[in-house]
Length: 522
Image (cartoon, rainbow, N blue to C red; front, top):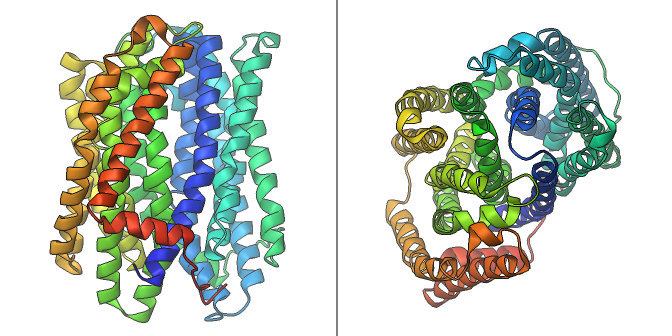
C-alpha cells in the first residue's frame, strides 16, 4: 500500500474511532428513548419531526457543503490561491445567510412539511404534535450545517477527529432529554429541545479547532467572493447526488404512514443499527478518500487514481461485507439485546429485526457508493452521481410500492437496499467506462473477502441457537452471548484473512502502525 493509501487508512481509522464512540452513545440514546417511550405514536411523531431538519442537514450539510468546501478551500490552503482567511469568512457569511432563510421558511412551513411526510396519518392531534416538534427541531439545521462547513475546512487541514466526535454531544443531549421528559407536557417535547441543545454544543466544539488553524470565526457577507461562487457551483449538483438516500427515507416514511402505527419506529430502530457499520466504515472511508483522490486529479495522474479507487473499493468491501453477514445472520439477537426492555417488547423486536434484515442486503453497496461518488467529485464531475441517484430513487419508489403490501415495512427497507445496489452498479459501470479499474486485482480482493467471510455464518447461527432471545432480551446472559457471537465472528474473519495473506488486512495494519509522511498542505 502506497503513502496515499496509508493516509486514507489512517484518516479512516481516526474518523471511524470517533464515529464508534458516537455510535455507542447513539445506541444508548435509542435505548433511553425506547425505554421511556417504546414504539408508538409519540416516537413516530418525534422521529418524523427530527427527520425533516435532518434531511436538509444531510443535503446542505455534510452531504454537499463539506464535500464542496474541501477542494475549494484546499486551493487556498496550498497557496494555489491567496487569502484563505477572507475566503473562509466569505463562505461562512454566505452559508449563514442561506441557513437563516432556510430555517425561517422551515419553521413557517412545518405543518406542510409534516403532511408531505405522512400522508396516511389522519389523527389531527398527532399531526399537530408533530408540527410543533418540527418547529422546535428546525433551528438544529442552522447549527449543524455550520458544523459541516467547519468539518470541510478541518478535513482539508487533515483534522478529522473533532467533526466525527461531535455527534456524541447530540446523543448526550437526547439521553438527557429522555431522562427529564416527565417534566414536560407532553414528555416528547424534551427530545425536541434536546436536538437544539445538541446542535449548539456541536458547533461550539468546532470553533476552537478552527481558530487554531488561524481562521477568524466571524462571517464576511461578501457574496461575490470567488470562493463563494465556486462552492455554490459545486454544491448544487452535489445536493441532488447526496439526496438519494434521504429521499429514499422520506419515501419510506410516506409509504409507512399507510401501515400500522409503529412501522416508522421499526424502520427507525433498524436503521440505527444498520447505520453503525455505514458510519464506521462506508462514511469514514468516503471522507478519507476525497483529499487523496483530489491530489491525483490535480497532478493529472489518472493511472494513480485508477489504482487508488480500485484499492479503496477492495477495502470498502473488506470492511462492509463481513458486517453485512453479521447483520443478516445475527440481526434478531442484536435487536433484542439493544432495544428489548421497558416499553419495547418481543413483538417490537421481531418487527425491527425484519426491517434490519432487509436493510442489510445492500450494506456493501452503500460502501461502494461512498468511494465511487468521491472519485467523480475529485474529477469535478458531480453530474454523474446525480444521474445514478435519480435512477436509484425511481427504483426505491417502484419497489417500495410493490413490496409494502406483501412485506409491510420490511418491503420498504428492502426497496432501499435494491436502490443502493442500482446506484452502485451505475457508478461502477460509468467509472469503468471513463477511467477503468484494475479488474484482476478487484476480483482477487472480492474473492478473498468472500472466502474469509462465509465461514462466519455457521458460527453466528450456532451462537444464535444458544439463546432464548425474545424471552431474555437484554439480560446478562443475552449480552454475553451477543458479545461471544460478534467477537467470535470477528476473530474468525480476521484469522482467515491473516492466513490468506489479505492485502487489505496488511494495509490496515500498515496504515494504523506505520509512519506516514505529512501531506504538502500540512
